[in-house]
Length: 205
Image (cartoon, rainbow, N blue to C red; front, side, top):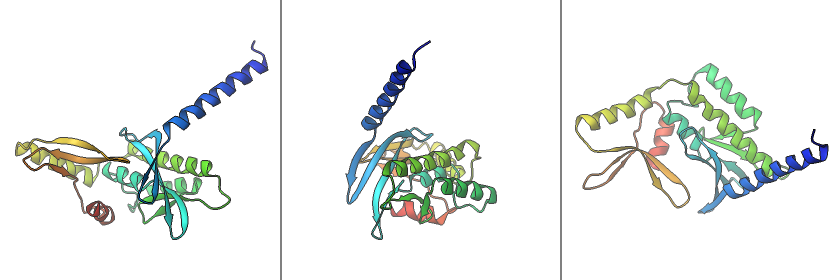
């Protein structure tokens, strides 16, 4: 049997390697007045989770920039739907991690004076991952069907296109439903009236 000291050394080595991996894979960027942090954790679609440090009303917050809401809605899940069961589940996830929802679309943790930033970041990422797991128990709804109808239209009209097109940005990637390589190139995001708040936000972007 290994002695306790040898086991302790192994545990310390594991912790050290994990901390070193974390320090290499949390990649900070700056956009405007905000700090954007690309985490090493991924969404179910393979995109990296990003968090932002923002100032709202004189208070500092870590937020997901609305990325979780956008991802879920494009997957057919509306966090603001009137489903009682889903509302209870979402509220329990937010409450358990002490995370709030800004403007109905943005997950956020307030960085109060006495708060541990590492713990706050961990809580935010935990809430993001918990909410994203809803995609594994969902059925396609209106917005997904509409996107499929648009794709069917392109096929019927023999319009060349590429689905789920990603544009590399300076600080983050931007995903579009379709890329159409015509004389004038088109990047397409399909909008549904199922959720006016989300549609208005994407239209503004």
